[in-house]
Image (cartoon, helix red, strand yellow):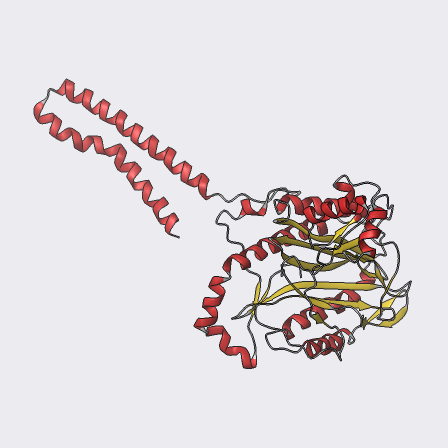
Length: 432
């Protein structure tokens, strides 16, 4: 507001600038001849014009400064350039309930938040990148696309928008694009020729991070409207989980609420009715810095652990709706890997394994990666070395998780932050 007032205030000055010379001339007329007077008027008018043109220039400059650039299509501008103040928008705010109502107005809790502002801003930047990338992907995803092309387009867009910078900013984990009965942890390996079909149900699960503060957020794409109730079940269940979450809330209570909503849905697929099930061995999870799974699990069925959520924690609240058994097992070729967070120094005998570990430490540290990311870094013939790192406990493989063949699974996921005064759904967007 302040800037606009100053901006308008300049306009009358310009007009005065042009008329000032006339006032100045009254004194001149007493002393000098009319010829000189005409000359002075001319000179003064020229000066006035110069002044006013300088001011015009100045005005245009300040106008240019004010124009905030808009994102290109396809997106290629780093989000940092779209927010010149360096302050990124906060997510959806939900107030705490019941015993935690006092937090909303507590001065002490507000002060705690002021101290955490840089951390909040980092994760909000990662969330803004996520929103812009998924908006773009939704506009271009269509049947007939090669899954590899889809992933690479998404990942390259993230890299541009987040201004990828080693371990400081970038992709938090591989792009999951699991299809149909595959619930999670599938991304194409190099050479994979899988093509997206009209009747596929694809979970697009990707992550962004700034300084290790991770936004883990997912949605489901289905072109056939027959699957809409299945998608709605997981979207509704995820929002229920978010609503129930809070400081001192027991994780098992969230699971019970999620299951109740999830199982109130049914879906008709090719003339057959299915009761929608929560996948009982998949969970949401707490998130730490450079640590996608930080130790606490948020169940999506009843009967989970009594552990409580605590102030300051980040959680990925995710739910999986299935028409199958509601239980997943590991299957198919592995693509996802991650260095164990707590692993100390383990001596390695294979030189190639040592070399590969150095690449992993430098580029991913404890963030998850996939084989395509190693290929992109120029690593070749690394499968033996990678197996050696897995066998020695340094790296953990995460194979695809599958329900029964022929079933369909949908997923929605958001990252939330339990701030001292309120709950922030960091990755919330206009879309979901």
